[in-house]
Image 1 (cartoon, rainbow, N blue to C red):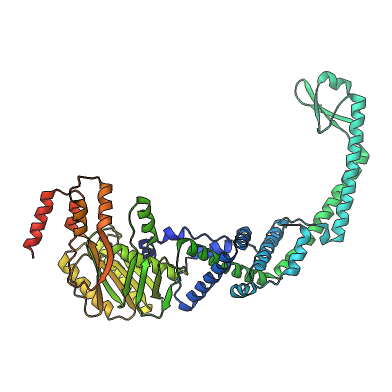
Image 2 (tube, rainbow, N blue to C red; image 1 turned 45 degrees about the horizontal axis):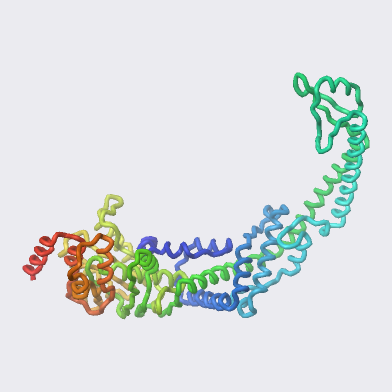
Length: 531
């Protein structure tokens, strides 16, 4: 599947898929490939429903995305909930969940399983703050409130005793400890303070002394009382946290249900956003084996690259009524892009997304495989040809487990053409006799013996007449302009019924790209001699 995804450049699209919640991002990372038509229908239905809701009100759509973005992951373990921070996250989760569910109409809540059951728990947690803030309020315990009130009395008394002592020190010794815990004075000043009962002195360096206030017995007694009460406050806070954690844990199943509903909503909303922004349509799913039909299907990565380069892009329209299909065409003629477009559309459809096309009709495969790649690729000592054969053996074995969409691009291109054509013909005939296989082969070999079960297609190719009219009388041009000319006059259309036809665009394209006229002329002569 990874080679199939890489061939389809699927990650280019997947990078645009950005769920807002931790639960949606978790589902994104799973990269699920659905093999059930019923499950896919359910995913499409949710995306449709989310799209209708988001398109109905911009204000509600913005609020929904705000709360989805603010939704934290709620960790429901005694350890995680054993602190105010853990309870804060639980409350934030419930608060945003409640607001999201309020936004959804009843019918939409039902579709997503968004059933709110935690009003009492949220009200309990709301005693700890407003908005998204949370603290252990005295509202959770009368005893806790009383201790905090007593601590406040201690704080007030300590402040008064401190101010009284500092005032006395200013008046008696001229020392100002305002906003300071100590002062550094020279030895001469320190000598005057010798024996003062309300000051504590200790050496600072060779010529200075540190001086601190001594606040007295009353201050120490109140401070000790405050420390005792702070210890009791901590005990009461721990008890309140334990009680609140128990209340949250008692609703663990509700939290799990909310997370599941929010994950579905997040994913569906993001799929709907992509469908609206990229003009995607819902696929029509048929039971395998069934025809695959594409109408103006767009391979988005290439479409974007051509748009950036100022080149024309041609969507793919094709109907494949047979399970085995061979696409003939010359290099640069678009046959690989046709395969990529099909792979891209199928991956989107079986990943739960809508598809960039006017219409896409397909069936749901148990798996997908791609065979092809760089000619110089090697692994484990195998040549490119060896790798292809190994990949084919692996893919062929998968047919025992269910339907398989198999795409092959220039298969066996690295061996001699006679053996390659024979091998391809035998493979395609075998696949044609296996009802679990749906195979698409792009090749420049012509006239393969594929048996009666395979359908043949050909890329329309280079429009020589139009090119000659355009190029007549024009001077030399650079590579970019030459590539634009090839793009301008290459007809990326898929024509059915091409058995035995040869692709003969290579020499034309070589000439456009600057190969010497004498070489091009001689190549044509050789072609004539071999007819």
